[in-house]
Image (cartoon, rainbow, N blue to C red; front, side, top):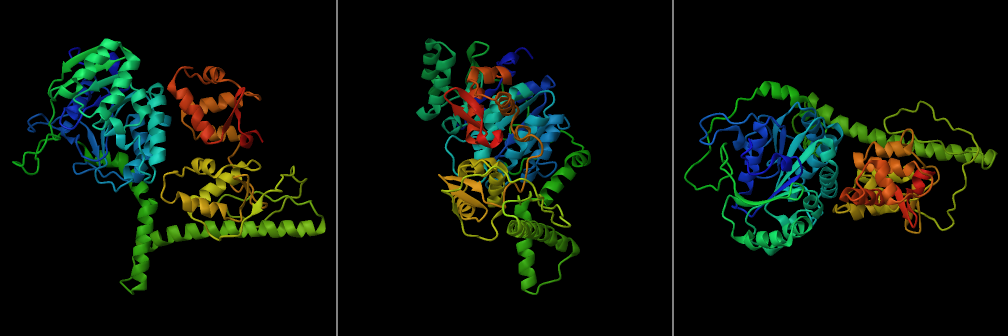
Length: 549
């Protein structure tokens, strides 16, 4: 389809579709999708709040089938979509098992979109095969510039940036759509090579676009575009591609599918239309097991069920079913066993060490604690030469606090894993995937800093004696972290690890296969520094103390 207003070469890069409500932004994004599907491209649409995209499955008049999109979730979903199924769904999208999909999150509770996205995005990056165009409707919800501090928002922004900076090399082509340009994270717009700008009247919404134009085109075009933004007619937009040197004002064609996102007139009720036939049984067989497993293991749902059953038992209500007993026991037994095993093993280690030291002081070295769920039939104390001493002259032991929350436990495990190096609380929390914007962040800090398991010196935390390394990264710790990072960050970490001395940014870029002028290089190095995996020195970058020891 050579007559489409945006060149195919431009659509091979990341694209942003901008415009205020009613300016034609969503319709234009739909015409892009229609054009891509006509050329047999794979498309996945993330629709976070409004269920605006199901109309693709019907014709313009609603009387004939439209495009064969599979809809997961929402009021028109062929199968349900659960916030905990992000990883499973991403693997299906990445493999091509769902070539055309709409992931409708309109029914998610607040924070559900971020929960889904932080599992979806890394799995898509790691498992991607071929090319997929990923539409992010209301992209500012996934990557806001100003953070509200809700739930997993911090990690959602991180993974949105990773999609923008590392996604294209993995075969992911982003199409970002937003009516709130000022609210979208700068890194997202900065990664787009093509802008489709509909009417924007607010100066704050115009500014990010004008700044992008100044970096990608001549002053005369900047003035022409910025001078007309507030008066563009509905459906008309500036198409600006820095890579293709394409800057034109165009009137986009009407969509050829059903316009379910049109402003309601109050004259019709439920929209009854003919949609593309979907083999629902086959779709359920593809995603059903993964979705059911994710839903069954969702911590929030399980805790709610436990609370309901507890109240029912206390009130003398009806006898619970076998399935309910299983759900109750599954979580209760697991959490109780893990916590009891951890505390009991720690006490045994300390007692054994003290007994050996009473006979031969300095001979006993505390053994490694097993991971939760590993049954220790009999504790074994290994007698070996003591490890190099670690100065704790300024460290202050903390009183015991008993059981800690699961999030605090993750942070403590990260600190133990870094021993003998110490970490700031912020770095340990980030490594554990705990958002700094979480409303419970301060509480987690108090739990960790008051735990008997750590000592604090110079605002950094280190494992107390007897608690070192309860959970280890198997094998080389550099490989262990690289396997958890996005591909570009992992390549940078391995490049820095390949040298015993510090290396400069240009050398990191060359060894990691990253452009030395790309924004992804700087953002990736900052991520590694924030995680305290690398250090920046006057001579360049080197591994942190935690990974060098």
